[in-house]
Every structure is written in structure tokens, then in C-alpha cells.
Image (tube, rainbow over all chains, first blue to last red):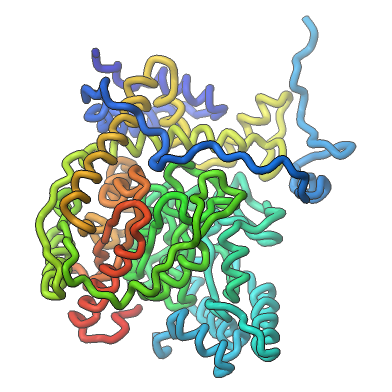
Length: 102
Length: 488
């Protein structure tokens, strides 16, 4: 397997957009240098030949757990909505989601 | 400080249950200590004085009525501010959660209260528990109680400093890559990361869900054991909570180590500062002279732990922190449309380290890099777990350093994330494996700052780990010639 390319400014700009973060030029420069060092360090792992090793996503053998399907008390709607930045008619209110029709 | 050394949690609870002290007095004394010193130390983000006094009064009413207020009766506790507390602010030291008041208590908070403990406040941390010095807090750093020019470690630096400063005998932290044990070591307190699944994560604000575990920070091993028994045990509200009864640990404390096999883990000593390595060697000698057989053990796969962790933890964090979108709680920065609002909110609300980790995780999970980074890291996790299993076929516990150095100066590593990440190199392996580990104070470094010795055990062997920790603690006290150890 070939080594992945080193991390550059374009990669950082791309992942920032995916993660809904907006960076100034200075931040882009600084974060690129810092993250490139971490990725450089991670090359020891990326270079390992571990194709025959199974991945671990969780350290202990835990299976999915379902509770009995019995109704129980839950948080009051108004208590939850009280923490929201904006509400209307018992719902969370957010700015426009869909753009104008073409 | 001129005060007499504060009582341990066990001593406080015994005095309250016996009617010799009131919870109200203990809480008032704790609040007074905080008031005198926390302007400088800044361990707390929020002190809940009124609520604490009210809770203490309830404990005293119970005790006066002849009902048992519980094993932590009247004990003031400090909670890391990523543990949800009903009606009290829970910020994760992030501006994105400033002003949020959770509508429920974390399971550990419920259990502490039910055991008679009194929450006195919420402690500072690196934002969303991402950091090793508590300098990444959105609300200013915490300072080391013994030397304010130094960091207390992190990310649970506020809880560790609150215990080290003598404000409270018990703090809770969360440990994803060492965030309980490392600040405990740097501050000269005991810190425990339990086996993954022993303590419910319900109400712990998620950082990296396959690694996060809540643990106690205390002045002594016996207090940590009692707190873990109180907060541990199955919780149906956490799907990763292990079935079965809570751990029974306190009985193991006096058993000694005669006949136990102790491995001094080379990877947890090599690369640490010479004064730290010297303390580990002394602790190992003390275990040997207490009857344990001590040998050197190598777990070479630990060398890949740091890299694997700094791919896996950010990957999980990038997913967990997607929920901070300005829609339902916390900060909102308005914009024309919802995507713009999400971006403006997250850009304004998250600090630099959180942004770094989110981007790193997004990168490690992104198309073209997933197999090379995240996929490899998960396979390395398997290698590490297998390597631990081989080591534990030879020895019962492993010992090593908790942190490579003593507490470092404020500002020393903030601009060099990789140097900061190295602070976690000795603690990360236990998180990746899901195993328990404890840091016990053991003397000082050449700079006079505390050193922690770490004891690691296989999954669900907390009892054995505490058994060894108690002997390490006794040796540390003998070494310093003090029955309680030093306190700042």
C-alpha cells in the first residue's frame, strides 16, 4: 500500500467545510502546520501491515442492548424547549433550510 | 496554607454518620476554602453555594432522624463541568454551551447525591475534555495549587486542583486518554480510570464514546475505592454499561501484595523524565519488599498507542460534536439559512483545540484516508489488546509512570499540539484496551512537584488494582515520613 499524501491546506479547507467550520487565512495556515505534524506522527500506524488483523471499534465484547418496549416517563417538552435558542408553537425554530425556488 | 489537613471522605462520612460533625459545617468549611483561594487557582467554573447548603441540611435532617445518610454522608464533592447537573450550568468549558442548564442529572451525580455527598460546584476542564493542561478552557486556565506558574494537567485539571488545594476530598473527572490520571499525578492526588462500562456514561457529555469513562480523584486510595463503589454498577440508561453488581473494592485494600506478580512496563518508563522513572523504580522496589514478585515486562505495541488514539478519539469526537449546531440548545449565531447558522455558531463557539480535533477526525474518516488512518488505528487497537493479554499471562498487574514529566509551566505547550499530546503517552493504552488504571502519588520530582505511579490491571480487575495501589500508597507515605502524605 502506498503512503497517503501529506496533509495540505486544501485538505484542511475541505474538512473544515465538511465540519461546518469557517477558517481565516491565518487559521488555515496555522492549523495546516499543526495537523500535518499529527498526521506525520500517525504515519507509524499508517505504515503498518495489519491487513490480517481485525479492527476493534469497542474494547469490550458488548452487544447492542434494547430495553423492554414499555412506556415510561421522559423529559417534558417544555423543559427541553426552554433551553432552545428559539422556539415557535412547541417546536425548535431555525432559519430557512430550503433555498428560494429557481 | 495554615489549615490543618482536611479530613478524608471516609473520615468525614464517618463523623457525620456518628453525629460528631454536621454536613452543613463540612460544606461551609469547603466553601470557605474555595472562597479564600480559588480566585488564584480557578479550579471552579461555578460554585453552587446555595444548593450545596440546602443539600447539606437535608443530610443533617436525615442523620438527626436516625436514618443513614449514606457512605458519603456530608462529603463535599466537585464535578467536572462535562457532567450534567439538573439546574446547574454545564458548559464543558465551551462557549458553545455557555448558559445551558441540563434538564437532568448524570447517573453518577444521582448516585453521589443518594450516597449523601454534596455537590459544591462544577470544575474547569480543557474544552470538551480535549487537552492535557486545562489551558484549553474557554473560560481561562486552572493553575496548579502548589505552584501557580504551572498547569494542573488535564483535562480534569479543575477537579484535580480542587482536591489538591484541599477544597474537597472528592472530585469526579472523565478519562478518555488519561484525563483523570494525568492531572491527578501532576497535582499529587489519586485518580482512577475504571474498566470501560463499570461507570455509567449517562449524562457525561460525549467526547470519544468508545474511550470515555468517569472516575474519582481523591486524596487517598481508600476514598477512591468508596467513591467507585458508589458510582459504579449497571445503569439501564447507558447501553455500554456492564451488567452485574457494582465493583467491590474496599475489602481488597488491606490484602497486601504477597505472591502477586508485578510487571514494570518498559514502555511506561522509557522516555519519561529521569526523576519520574526513579520514583517508579522505588515503587517497584517497595512492592518487591512487600512480597510481590517484580519483573520487567515489555508491551511494544504501546508505542503505537499515541498515534492510534489521536486518530480514533478525534474521529469519534468529530461525530459526537456534530450535535452542536445551534438548533436545540447552547449558543446560536444567526445567519441567512440553517447551514450558515450552523457554521457561524460552531466557528464562534468552539476553541482552537476542539476545531483541530474535529478537523483531524473528519480527515481520518474522510474518503481516501479512512483505510490508511482510522481503519489502521482500529487494527492497532486490536494489536494492543492482544499484547496486553500476553503481558497479563505473565503478570497480575503492570506498573509504570502516569505522566512523562511533572507539572509543566503554563503556556509551555499550547502552541505545539503534538508536544501536548505526548503528555498522554502513558495513560492512553488503558483507554484503547478498556482496562482499569489508577495513579497514586509517589514522592516528588527534582523540581519538588508531585509524581504519580500508575498501576494497570486487566479488565474488571479493579479489586487487584486497588490492592496494589494501597501498598504503593503506604510506601509513598513511609518514604515521605508522613501518615497522610504531603498537601499543598
